[in-house]
Image: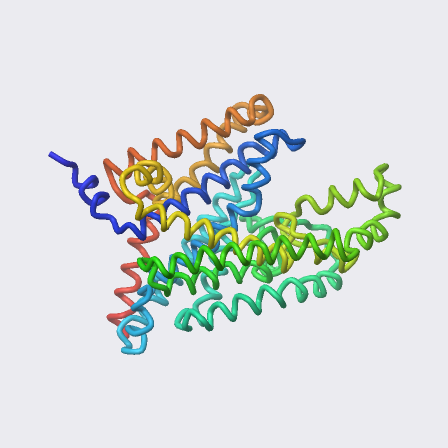
Length: 414
């Protein structure tokens, strides 16, 4: 006799399997970044894997969160149902409740995190801010995403030059809820100065929401997504290379950082390499030339466009592979199982890291890449077993159950 969960999996829509596989890549990428800690940063296979995953995995997850918003509100048919007045209040309530639950979970995880900067409270704010734009057509959503990507980083830069703060990155923790001043700092962090600030992360969710309104079963749509994603990646990363290495951006950075370089006993070139290899969520404000880089978590227009392109291309590839028969399905299925439980795996790996750090503080320094591989393998195996034996992951079950009941209650009251 075939277990019920297996029958459900066999009937699962291929479009969703491709989406889950992309989500699985995203959460595995975040595990790689968090557990490895970037070791060895000097190069080799580990450094290459870390370099690919850093920043892009979280952005892929953000784009896919936008896709999920589109699917939660009816996907391609949602706009027609919205015009008929059959689902607007229900869907707004469901998404708003999910945002609240994600915020609470994010704050709780931040309280125990041994190092990873928890992204969930940022997702909650992004979800809430997407609500007024939820029912726009895909073209309008893409226009909003493109406009925000062009304007947001520049506005962020200008505002941050006026703000005097020593804080870099960060998220919302329970201590931020203990006073009005701390709460104000947390709001500023969420919107502008944190690791995943709304000022530069909103385009990811809006682009994903637009994709969620498309017919993802269509081969033509998937092909256009792949072409558009590659084009955006070339435009973003290629544009940054042109601006920095051809049109004088690097020289401007060297000139601005030269006085600081002598204080930290580095050459200006070394300091430029250090400050543009990665960031904590925002670009530097010492010179506008920082807006030309495409470093992970720099929040520049070039990074936003390039990383969005990578995310869209990865999603398109996963959707295409989901249609290619048993061989690719066998390869993609473990990723899809992990992606279907991405919130559970994300929360679980942060909790396990915290427990290990409390028991063995040096565990990450001993064999960082062995630990990374073990985390990834165990996450995939547990996801496969859980999906087969039980079904929906525990965090996903709470999000689904509570938000669905709230949506029904809101509809009944309306």
